[in-house]
Length: 397
Ligand SMILES: [Zn+2]
Image (cartoon, rainbow, N blue to C red; front, side, top):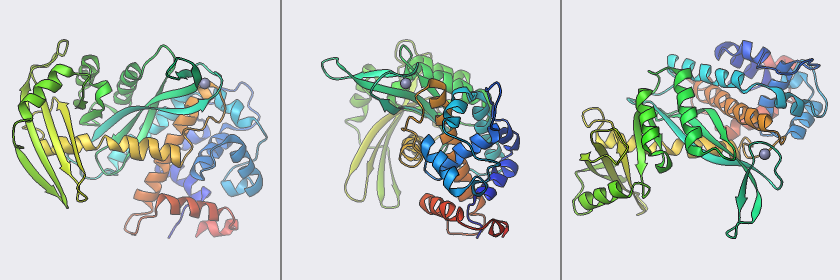
């Protein structure tokens, strides 16, 4: 089995993913570069894939494994990564991510899901004690005292089709908001992927506002959004209707029981230019007795998507939490501030997503072709580490 090595990954990214031009010129903004951008961007990606994302960690890795073992043309000194990421343009990495995602759909990397989704959600990644860049947002104690600073971002991921690919982020600093950043991000995602790429966008209650829903409609996307107390009139009308009714349908998935209520004739709230609002409530009973209930609103008609299909789209929102933010933070160091500078933080987030996308496509789609079982993310990482100690001739097997 062809396990991961830096050289194989380089070939894969350059040839199969079509990012050869990006790896050579990722959008270097340095005036007189001493070290080629190709060396530094690959070192940053390898640092993430080896889960050694800090800049000193990456520099030590290159120094101790040797540049050649990581498929780098040369080594580099301290501070090269900080200087480079301050000046690397985010646009190049964003384009590369969108290109890989579009190519994945063409190559049928997504399962034959009837609906392909985009999930959008926000998180905080990277604390610091002192303010250090334009993106720093203070967080305060109950009494208003500033406890420190956070960096906030909104991310977008392909969901609902068996392969989560988070592919862009939009930061928001002080004076900006998650909600405004989410709209910029959704607009850019559809511009880059095309209007026909996805069927729906799924979001939490914070995005269930008229302007966001209208924007999704303009961009040709159906919306599936969590209905919470921030829409009190609609939430009350839904409870009044469904609270006294037995479920319209009951489904069994494995050992889970899923009860569905739905109606498509709720009144829109003031400002929402929809004729009516469809709401789906589910109550999910887990085999261990746990029970989850939630209400979701959508403009998908019943003819297009059944209550169960809307339930699945609603559940696909978890992918941006679990396979998106949790993996990015726990495995690839998204929450670590490598270098406290706004552009450096942004391009580090984007490179983290690119490393995740490369890892998933290589491990789950390329290595896995016809050869089960799938390597886990941990096995992939361990094999990549072990490959660093091998002599180079072994690399061609
Ligand atoms: Zn900052």
